[in-house]
Image (cartoon, rainbow, N blue to C red; front, side, top):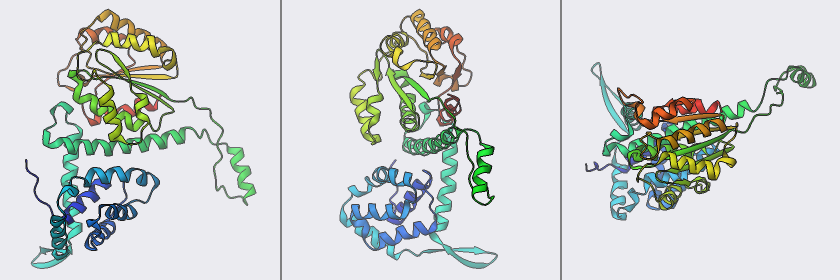
Length: 377
């Protein structure tokens, strides 16, 4: 479907909403300031426009860390057009009225057009987001894929902020009443700051083992994005992929650039979209990495549809051994999200007795529910 041509003003509104969905605190004033930047011709210079919007939109440290990638992702497609086309759009921007007329009870009222546009777009966007959150990844229309990726990025980032706050709170320990009162006496009797008992919190350690065989293609991509967000907040997070053989992905996650990480994974995981040998791959994990990445401090998360083409007995023994060596074993199966699903596949039937949790992973909402399991590590 051909994209409807938009004015540059509308694109700025879209970018404002794009940033709001990613937890940027923006209102009509910031949108108006962005309009002024464009009217002054700064948008003709991509670098100048980039830094101008960054100064307006970023008020927190995490905003500055994420803005560059967000700007490049959103605006790169628009800067491919010719400079003359951009000038015409900017001229049109200057001529457009800043108010829209509304008739109410026979009287005419002028309201700021930027506000009415933003509210209309946000209402439509909210409905689209609700629908996409519960849509199975394998059933997403091609026209919705870009929107789904943007929504996933926003929701995963919001989740990471919650994880960060909960980890920070958990590490404080219980309130030390006597110490708090003693500090209050020193401050004239005012309890200005709560003192906490020191709490030794076990380091959270998580191992993800992701099936990237052909039947798991779409689901694997979104869990990969999910893991890339979580890696920032867990003390120890290891990531493996498998289909016909196992690949250790963790070293590739050390880059800060998400697009570079995805590119390197695509170059290094040669078995992506091939067959499925779950038992052999988990046995390889045990033999090569088990002594290092399995203990009673670890939670292991396996994402697979369980459609084993190899030895089912080997799969059963590998899962049983992993369960005995780790604290919690979670199996995420996208098929579980389908209506009428029953875990009757041979692979799943054999591993079910050894699992602590068997959950779905077929849409964004199901992945977000994994947060609760991980926080109990």
